[in-house]
Length: 326
Image (cartoon, rainbow, N blue to C red; front, side, top):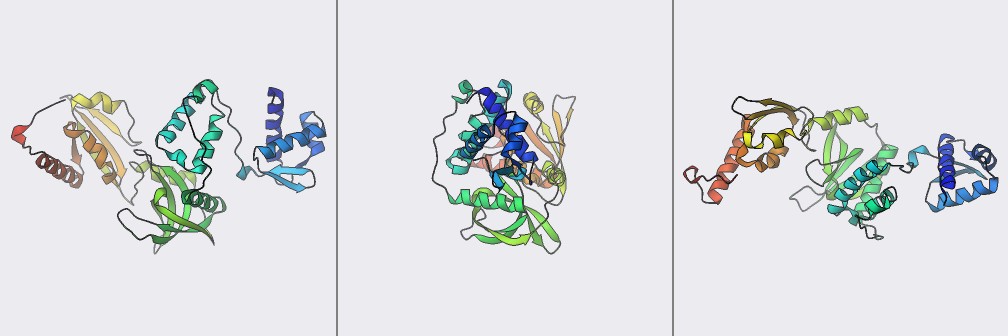
């Protein structure tokens, strides 16, 4: 397909989307594109082959519902490289084993420069899984603002729980490759947000019950308070002290929207933030070893200290036997 043809087909997609819900006939499209009606019909066939969701309002009158279609990406070389990094992250997490994800990645690769795309190998996946069906149902519920009945298996349990949820959004975990459903669950005091790991949702069924989604601003404000994905009704002030040995590593990354850094006279660094459910930070804090000290909150300081003592006993170490390797 030539460049001019590709440009006209893209222009036709724009026209059909802007004409929703009335639509445009082939003569109107031909006039707008300065081409023949036969060429327009050929374009329509090609769009159908590309699975563009054309809606035939009446004979030879078409439109595209903007809610059902996302325009193809047009990227610069630099933008394509950044997209490559994002796709590689998904592939390395093996999320492309799901047919829905596999299909998305395959399409995204068509937007990446050929020499860049060679660094990604994706084998076609044609067999659908229960996860694909669950995700499609949740997204349909989000789109139509309908509640969904799910079976959810909490960590450590063997029997799934039945839950009725309002799908508000999907959100990736910051510090892992997990993905979550952000959902509203009705309670005595109204609808409360729940973060449900997608891999633990066993089944999903659309219900004839409707809800109103919170605004994107409301959702993002709540998510900005979390460390990764865990959420609670209250936020907790957090204070950490990092040793001079890791100060550059700490400063080169923006760890949280609320963080504030204060370099001390002894070369250490005080790191402050306000976080919802700071227990989610425990693995990150432990990863810094003895180069970080929890100052506040007191209960988290005690938990980290107790775990450090258990670790020392596990290796048969005491304070008198301390050796520094870094």
